Image (cartoon, rainbow, N blue to C red; front, side, top):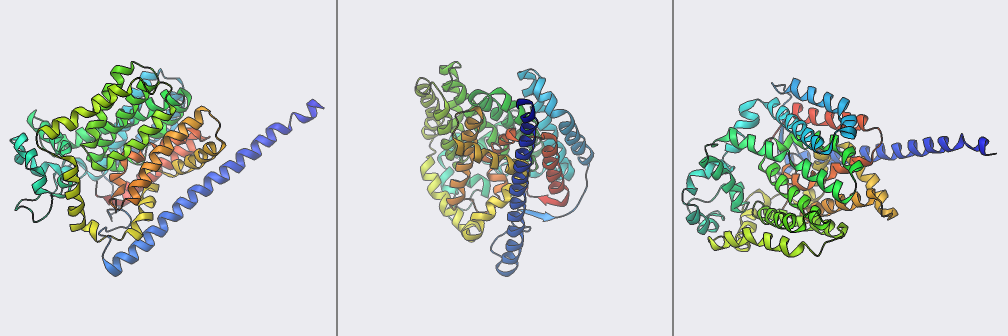
Amino acid sequence: MTSDLLPEAPADTRTAARRDLRRDLSAAAAAVLLFAVAAVVGTAVEHRDGTLFVNWPPLLAYWEPHLGPGTPAAITVAVAVVAYGPPLAARLPWRRLLAAVWVAGMAWTFSLALVDGWQRGIARRLTTRYEYLQVIDRFQDIPAALRDFTSHIVVGASPEHWPAHIAGHPPAATLTFVQLDRIGLGGGAWAGVWCITVGATAALGVLVTVRTLADEKLARRAAPFLALAPGAVWMGTSADGYFAAVAAWAVALLALAVTGHRPRRTGLASGLLFGLTVYLSYGLTLYVVIAAAVLVLGSGRVRPLPFALAGFAVVPVVFTALGFYWWEAYDLLVTRYDQGAGGTRPQAYWVWANLACQVLVVGLATVAGLRRTGVVLLRRDRTAAFRLGVLVLGALVAMLVADLSGMSKAETERIWLPFALWLPAACALLPRPRAWLVAQAVLALLVNHLLLTGW
């Protein structure tokens, strides 16, 4: 009887696998439909009312099919990661794997940016009238500039109000580029290279966190998806990619701290980076949700907390002592936001169209991975996959809170990069990784070659 039953188990397994694949493909198809509806509705609204302030809804982009010097490089990187990524991720020593993901992520991001050419794709991105490099000369005296920072946030409050991105962020963002300029790395090219090079390490922070709190096997399975993330289209070149890296490493160090890896040092370092994170972007205060997920999963969460809190206090204390008051600046930013396009853009559209944008940022494989993550979380089995799911859920909840806040209307393909880059970790739950990696690569290549994105 036993021998008669043996063939049935593989058949049942194959049936379950086919059923899961159909559900994965259905989730991906639903995501495509969501984006298509957002594009059709958004185009109609923009033509009728002109209130979206984007040229290719729901993305800040223009329809401009083009090739560029980065085209062959991007295709080469994609083919290499699809062909060799999964087996190398399975067998490389851990540190070499991290180095490989960093190099592959940089190559992917640089090559996609260079599809638009060196000047348009990298060197000029951070020099436009909205960007940080426009105000470098106004920070010759940094303490004086910080004391006076809030008086230039609201339009009309002073003759020289800050450009949009400077007004929209705490001053640590601008000071990063001021300091680069002071050490001889001034100009748009160096700023772009900085953002891409540092931003590519965000994937490493995610992998370290997954390995520490879930397990190494899942981190290894996620590695090729993080290296080939479609979000690289907007990582090159955007300061939000740099912000994402700082925040991801803050979480990774916290994960190490709460699992007993030199808790004093890692806790203090995590706190320092979390403090810097909230002075790079107001919206990244929502990283508290991801930090909470880490604390829930950590076994030794109490011991490092005093060190993490001490580290966190450093950056706010320094900026406050120099005359910049975070809460005052944020209140003024809300006023500035309402003065611009944000005050006109309809929340009724963007509250769901923002999510449609993320389909292109995280890719269809991630959508399928999120479906499987939901199944794992509903089962509540305290497995490594469940712990991975809690991390991913934390990033997803942070993103949804940002969406409901009304302060994220449009351009979330860039603004939400620090949250979105955690979601491809869910792809570790997918079978047939090469097929899904192909889908990720094709999506990114199509977006970058058919559209001229804002970043």
